[in-house]
Amino acid sequence: MVEQTLNVRRLLCFVSAGVGFLTVSSVITMSAPFFLGKVIDAIYTNPSEDFTNSLTSLCALLSGLFLCGAAANATRVYLMQTAGQRIVKQLRQNIFSSILKQEVAFFDKTSTGELINRLSSDTALLGRSVTENLSDGLRAGAQASVGVGMMLAEDRIGNVRTVRAFGQEMNEMKKYADKVGYVLQLAKKEALASAGFFGATGLSGNLFVLSVLYKGGLLMSSAQMTVGELSSFLMYAFWVGVSIRGMSSFFSELTKGLGAGGRLWELLERKPELPFNAGVVLDEDHFRGTLEFRKIHFAYPARPEVSIFQDFSLSIPAGSVMAVVGPSGSGKSTIVSLLLRLYDPISGAITVDGFDIRQLNPLWFRTKIGTVSQEPILFSCSIAENIAYGAEDPSAVTAEEIQRVAEVANAANFIRSFPKGYDTVVGEKGVLLSGGQKQRIAIARALLKNPKILLLDEATSALDAENEYQVQEALDRLMEGRTVLIIAHRLSTIQNADSIAVLDQGRIIECGKREELLANPDGLFRKLMKKQAFLQNSETFSLNLKSQKKNALTEYL
Ligand SMILES: Nc1ncnc2c1ncn2[C@@H]1O[C@H](COP(=O)(O)OP(=O)(O)OP(=O)(O)O)[C@@H](O)[C@H]1O
Image (cartoon, rainbow, N blue to C red):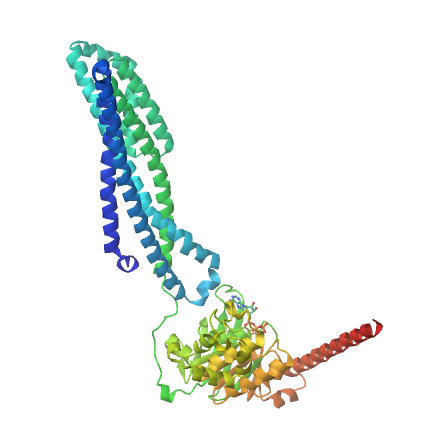
């Protein structure tokens, strides 16, 4: 998994080079106080003779060390940043492709904002954590350990000198240290504990610096150290304190990075409930497209307590047109979602030519289904590309084929009227086109796909009379020779259906030819027809009223 997720070998090269430069920069930087101490001692012991030379060499030494350290550090930062960016890029690609493979129910439960957060901030956080932060942490760790080591060494030198210089007085010193040095012991303990524990908090870093300063004062007052040694001792102390504080912020960043990594891994590892491209593929020559819903029980995963279908059954013979009508919210669009396997039923089965669609390869099965919905999904590219999207291999579709299907879909005229014709870019989700134009492009797309099964979901609602006529004519052509399921609100769109099924409270309560259903005086279909006829009449009435008022106003003016 790790191999797939990151290009590990290349990355390791970057990280090892980064760690190399990290070591170089740390060694250079950490040697500075030592040399500085030596030069200070030289100046201090012999100020008159070689003062200028010592000062010059001090400046040269410090500048050289500073420059080398800064160059090594800049290279380290560059390498770590590059490695981090590569990790982020690779992670984003893998996570995006994992998101695309998830089933629709996953998106019902996970908000878009959350996914964008995973893709943008979490990947960046993790990338930074495993490169820059880690290297900063290592650097701080190395500096803290070297610093503590050097301090202990300086301390030791001071002690040895004390033994030599003061001979017997050492015992006195020890006594003195025992008496006064309770705090000194504390300081030592604190120094080691802080370094060992890597300064879990910034507070321990501060305490450390304070205690070391105190100890520095004690050492100097007891003449154990030269001024230069004490200076470098204190510089190391300061450095260790700063490093410990740096490490505490490194730990907090690391914790955030680990949290982000956990969330990302969860997403990367998530197996979609629906196989992406696996399952039975039926023989194309014998595929007929007979559909059957058998005793379906279904509730949306996001709202499992609300049952949408209870014992829903419906048969659609191959090559026939079935219209489903019913009150709003009765579950008409849900039938389409189940057929496309956006969701699976809780119990019961949907079959095509007798095969349970759960056994079929979803990718193959969807190539057999064409959909035209009220709000067709268009992409922000040209009209030609949007039509070609329907084909199995869009790049192989010729301009002639696109024009032919556009002609059949009653779309050619309006496309030609655009200055850029088929190259017109339709804008995001096709915002630059009208509802009817978008639908005709979707019909052309479906014609090119040439599916055995056609799903029309409220395809002609919200259209004016002229547009509706054009779209309906194109749909009639598209429906020829296919198994068609029309989900209709406007009863005028179901004139051509072989059968009509009336859906209510999760079940089909009436099914038959239009005339048969209308003949039932208590039937829901008849009631729906009556209601719609009434609505249409009242719409016409209000339109007439408006135009009468307008005429009266014009006359008055
Ligand atoms: N993704 C979803 N998660 C949870 N509930 C949903 C989801 N989609 C639809 N529903 C609910 O399922 C029920 C049926 O919705 P559906 O869209 O199938 O009805 P419809 O008959 O097509 O309605 P309309 O005619 O108004 O389009 C509604 O109560 C709706 O709130």
